[in-house]
Length: 530
Image 1 (spheres, rainbow, N blue to C red):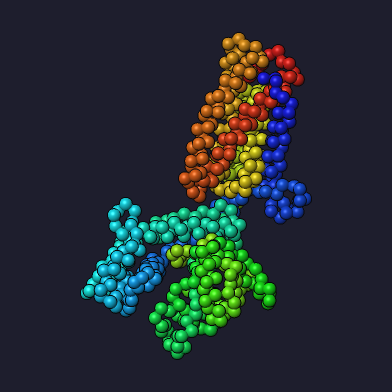
Image 2: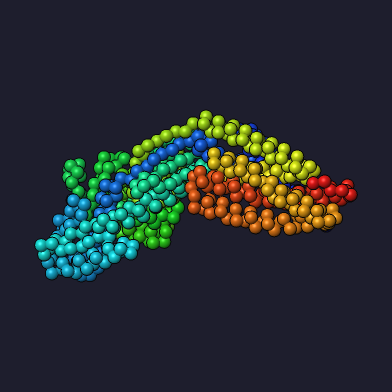
């Protein structure tokens, strides 16, 4: 009991002091902390949406647009499967009306071959035994490709999961803390972001599909036909930010899926904000080959079906990099870079509900939470002092250090405190002295058995520690599972509870043991009142 090495005591004291130092900034405002010396800790606890206010947005997927986009993707796959493999199959009269894809095979003898090639592009849906598209020949020369209900449901589910991940990456890039992003039903995503004072910027970033494509401009298109909205076969007409409309080839040279980086920058010639991008090896090779074969021709840089610019290819671009320009501001260039880095949304999302949460409710919640914490602390301290005397004082000191260590650890990891987190904090304070109660009662029991003072204290700590660690390990496991599988308020509660359990065991067992050891060494008591 008394043989605690000096180095160990100093190490524990330094550790506690470090935790207390990191807890201090959370008691001051951000402006006050910003004026502190550079060597001083500045990490603070972040407040959740329910405490600091922020924005809440409910997004809904445009399934009609998703079905159209899915059919267009399938058409590109079919054209590639039939047109790039020998013998090539010529098709025409392509239609996507009625939610299905149909076309004519010009040579009736190739219909069966075309059906087999198209079926090879379809995929199975889970363990249902169904395909995502059905392929059938009609009237001997026409092939109809129809999306199945199971395939559409599976594709929508995957798209919504991907969209949720993309939104999370975009919001985290803004530097916000602990956003809540959860699915609601089959087609909706709820986004709650604390501390955001510009919801319009948030909506613009989340709502942007960020589908980037590089396509060749169709120079053979008749300007009059383009102005009338009619595109040649194999091309499409897209709006442009500069010249009205442009006819471009349907097949993309490279797409945003092949991006590996996107960064805001400034054009070296005119100083205008631009976005520099880099492709993966496959995208870089495709881009290099396309620019080599089309020197002197324009290509279109397309974002969300809008042509940002259509520069000429003056020379082959072999480095796997490119530059996007389009009358950007510094802010819009940074937003586009974030959107491109996070990936494109596989489905268009529309804001159907927007709420702004003010900080007033959060201030009331914090005030009431502080009152609850103070009341709980005073009640626990009173009980420990009346029941255990000196050992109750040690438990009280450990309790206060425990509360500050929780705040310090949360600040170090930039954790977010929510209203349920305050509940977890109050619960932790109430349960923090459980370990001291077990230790003190065990020491009393050893005294009744006739053990001497030092033996009773040492046996009490040793025997009680086993039960304390076993009980709290199970609690930590439960809190960790809540944090991993939960979301929003549940995670906030679980985080504070998990940190509180760990720190309470440390303070209640290790720190009180050191305080008792120092008292015994100094006073050499002949009688133990506990």
